[in-house]
Amino acid sequence: MEKANPMQSIRLEKVTLNIGIGSSEDKYDGAKEILQRITGHVPAPAKSKSRRPEFGIKKGQIIGAFVTVRHEEARKLFEKALDAVDFTLSRNAISNNSVNFGVNEYIYFSGMKYDPKIGMLGLNVNATFARPGMRVERRKIKKGKVPRRHKMISDDELAEHLAKEFKVKFKGEES
Image (tube, rainbow, N blue to C red; front, side, top):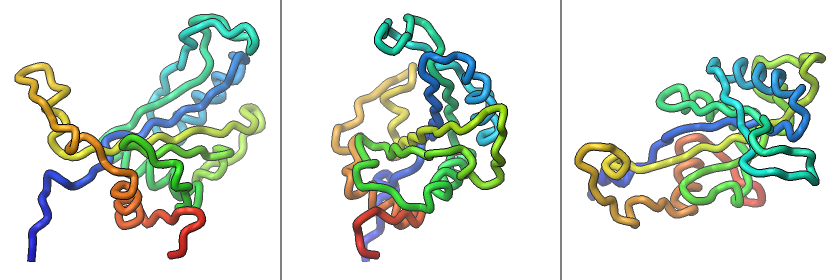
């Protein structure tokens, strides 16, 4: 019986929640409030990088809010977000070592109640996965190279990990 290589394991690195509000900055406070309630962290403003006159957006204008969560909190938040979509994802949600999906309305999260002051806002969830040892390439002191085959997690491998670790079902697949 062969032992599994621990360096080949896949782990959740971070989860980022994002709410886009477009050009109406009055929705920003509501978006911040929702993200703070869901995560317990203070969200950062997402600012536009370029001017988009067709959407009424100026460069540097606040167009959303986001929050990034790491470590054990990230795992709990990811499970909470998966619960909001009934642990069902599309195969297209997996790409480049990450899983991206949307939650149509914040009230789908357990424990969240509708707030008439905020209205209905949806959010995007981005979960990033990595293998152990990736810090070697990012650290400041004594950086090293990490081979491409260690960096890239195939979409099928990540889908298998999600199904096993988080009990995710994929749309259109028999279980």
